[in-house]
Amino acid sequence: MHRSLVAPALLGLACITASAAPARATIENETHPTRCAEEDNVSLNLAGAAIRRFRVEALPPAYLASIEQDRTAPDFSNCNFDGGAHPTDPRYTFKERRAVLHDGPRWQIVGITLPSFWRPQRVPVRIDGRRDRGFHMIQLFDKTGAKPLEALVMYPSDGYWRLKPLPAPRFGDGVYGSSFVMGPVEQAGRPVATITSIAIDTQPLRFTLKFANGGQARVDVREVSEARTTLDVSLKPGRRQGARFAVLRSMYVEPDNADMSEVWWKTTPDAAPRTRALPEVSKLEAADVRFGRSIPSRHNTSAPDIRFGDFRSGASR
Image (tube, rainbow, N blue to C red; front, side, top):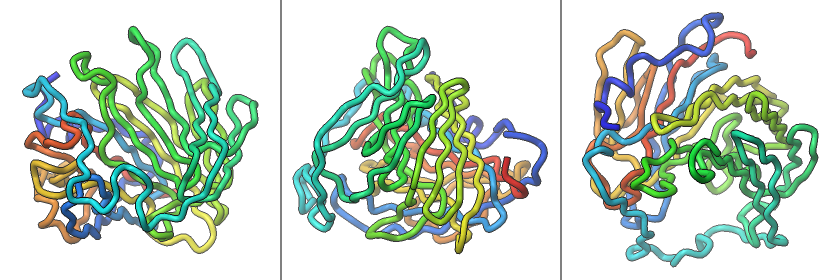
């Protein structure tokens, strides 16, 4: 499954539609240093006041074929917490629950309520007409292999998403790395998107989100495979919505201890790709951008790179 670093990352991205004009996003780096490998110290803002559509993908790191053993154990050696809640987080308690919301021939969708979470919101969820609420995690499992494998998890209470391709068999269930939040992003101790309701349709698979400011997002799951997990996103802005439409969150201590350590981007669809180490990134304009690693990390070694592209302006779908 070896793939070159640049070619799959920045070339040949299929368009969602041809009905809207290509656009560029502004990426700004608000990362702060840390020695704790379990802290999300990386924040990369993606902004574009006119951007209404984009694609986000989880892609295997370029070095994946060269490694045989994944390193996934947590490392709290330089942290001020030991696997529990972060000491600065609020803590709200809930009745723990797991509910299978859909179990079809291709997908299984599971809702999880945790015993505690840092946000109190209990977001209503409707899936193929079935109504429920109060989940902190919604997990998507792909059932095409010998056992269901998780490829996506989203967090209704704070608006975060995590994606990963289906793992190569030698990596078991695989691991997540970077996460992202999208929609009308605001600060609440960390970047969040306040979701007021979620509707999930399974044929085809689609998430429709409504936000507290009246905005909406449609998230279509286009592909889940060993090569990639792909979402196509269409946004409808709400009241008092700024230009920021997504934030990538990740961990960086040093290049070989990071969930992402480099940025690859193209300024236009036909431009030559550029590369820069994360600490050297301040602000850039990109038609296509990938956040990832070119050398194996001792933290979540097989975790995917995250790529945003096919930015489009114009009316929402």
